[in-house]
Length: 165
Image (cartoon, rainbow, N blue to C red; front, side, top):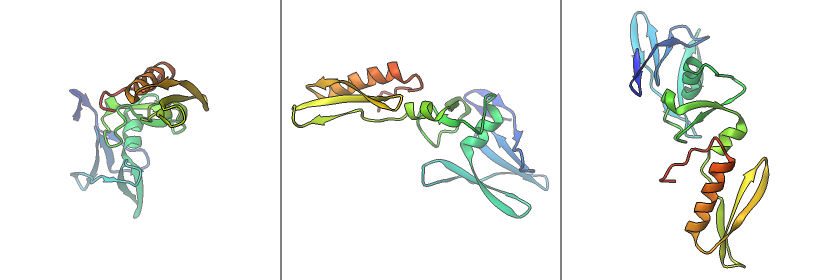
C-alpha cells in the first residue's frame, strides 16, 4: 500500500493488463515475484505516460487515467480526468476528478482580458456556454484581471483559482 496525502491507498490491478498495478501515483509491474516501479515519461501534451506490455504487445497508457480508473468511484471513459490544480503531472488522487469536456475547459488558465488600443483600456470577456460574454473595460490590467477572475469564479464552477496564475 502506498500513501497519498496522508491516506493509505490499496494497490489495484489494472484491468486488461495482468501483472500491472496502480499503487498511488506509481504503476507497478510484478513479474516472477519481483516488484518494479515503471518509468513514466511526459508526452507532447504534458501528461505522464507509461508503457504496459501484454502478450508481447506494448501499449502506451496515460497515468492519470489509470489512477482515476483505479481509485475514483465515478470514473467513466466518457468523461475527462481533470487535474484540479491544472498541473498535468500531479497525479495525486486528491488532485484528480471526473469532468465533462466543458467542466474541464472551465478549469483552464486563460487571460480573459487584453489591451484594447482604440479605447486605451483593457477589455475583459469570458466564454459561457460557447458564447463570448462582455465583462467590461478597465483602466488597468490589474482591474481587468480581477474582474475576469471574479466572473470566472462565479460562472465556471469547476475553476479552481490559484493565486500565482
